[in-house]
Length: 338
Image 1 (tube, rainbow, N blue to C red):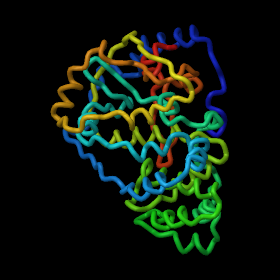
Image 2 (cartoon, one colour; image 1 turned 30 degrees about the vertical axis):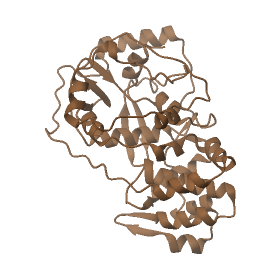
Image 3 (cartoon, rainbow, N blue to C red; image 1 turned 180 degrees about the horizontal axis):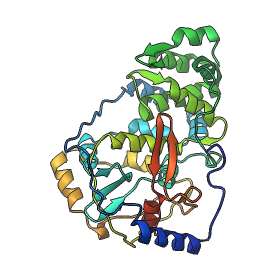
C-alpha cells in the first residue's frame, strides 16, 4: 500500500465487462444463501469529546490562518460544527451489513466510498496517490510529536501520559501550545492533530492517541488519510449489526460541482431536524424505494474509481487500528460503472 494505489487507468467498457462478470459469478461478492450470525441487539456509544475550546480557537483565527488549514488539511475544521444525530445514527446501525461493509435498506444497498470521502473532506490534490500504512520502522511517539509540534524533547516527555494500554498527549497541553506557539505552521499542524485525535479518531476522552500522531506525521510525506478514515467508519459500524441481501440496480442521479465546492460547508449551513425519533427513522429507512435514492453523491466530481486490487475483487483498506475489507463491486454498481 506504500506504492501508488491508483497506478492504472482502464477503459470504462473493460471495467463494465469485468464488473458484470463478477456480479454474475458472485452476486456482488455476496455469498449465496448468506445468513448473518450476528446478535440481535446493538450497543452504540455516542460519547464525544468536548469540542468547545477547539471551536473557540478556530473562531478566533483570521482568514489567513484558516486558509493555511484548508490548503494543508482540507475541510476538516467543518467537522467541529456538525451535530451528530444520535437517533439517526442508532437507526442506521440497524441496517449496516458488517460482512460486506454496506447499508442495506430493503432492495437498496449503499456503501460509503473512498471517492465520496475524498470529495467530502476536500482533500488537497497532492494527497491522493499513497494510502496510509504503518511503516516497518516507526519513530518513537515523542519523536513524532517533536516533528509535529516543534517542541523540545523535555516538553514532549513531560506531556506524554499513559491511558490504559496506549500512550497519549492530553488535549489541554495541545490547547496551550496552539494558543502560545510562535510558529504559524506548527500551530496549524497541532490544531490538525487535535481534530484528528478528538473528532475523527477518539480513543481516550480528552487525549490524543499515539497512533493518531503517526498518521498526521505521515501526511507530511504525501499520503492520503481518506482510506484510514473510511476504515474507522467501517470498524465503528461493524461493532453494530444487521445483514440482508441486495439486487443489482441501474439508476444513477448526480450533479457536478466545481472543485472549490465544499459539501461539508453546505451540510453545516443546512438546517436539520433533530426531533425525529429512532423508531421513525427506522420506518423511513425500511420504506426507502429505489427511485428515492441518489446512488451517487450529488457533489461528487467524476474521477477515477478504485474498483479492485490486482486480481482481487475485495480491497484491503488499512486504518490506524487495523484493516477492513472493501467491496468495490458494490461501488461500481452504485456508480453504474462510470
